[in-house]
Length: 240
Image (tube, rainbow, N blue to C red; front, side, top):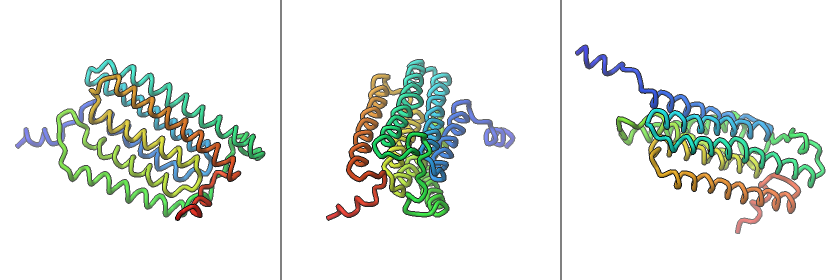
């Protein structure tokens, strides 16, 4: 009986504990994006998410003895923390120059009111979607000695909440950030479930992110050039 009790209250491993804490941090950053009225703050939260993903790669590399993941962590940090935010900020400054609105050039781009629901309603919806994803994965009964099940459940919640962000926001920049944060959720899932993938595949997934950034950059410029606005509300008139 005492041995059973000891096994029940045993402390989590370094991998499980670190992955769980980082996954919760990524989810909290995702929720924070719903409350931000400035695009620069959303970009900062995306940077925070990306730093946590890179840190998780280091944790997995150290605990599972996968040295390739150190290279992945460095490349992920360079792309997601440095390159992608730089491109997003350049896009915002470029749009400001096109639109003639000085707020774009200073970074004070207010997007309040660009969502279909109120902030409180959106957060409640996101909480419900996150809970659905979390408990659905838990109900699948996935078990493995090397799999942080809680982190896996949270990663699925991150992906679903990112979908909510993309749906409820009506400005193309927020939708792009929602897609990028969704990719962070996928990266979190991959590190938890399949950290031993060949390095070439993991790098290929990262370069897919660059393609997505290039596509969104073109979309943002074309949309703003035609509509002189970042709102996608007028696009509903194109429905057949």
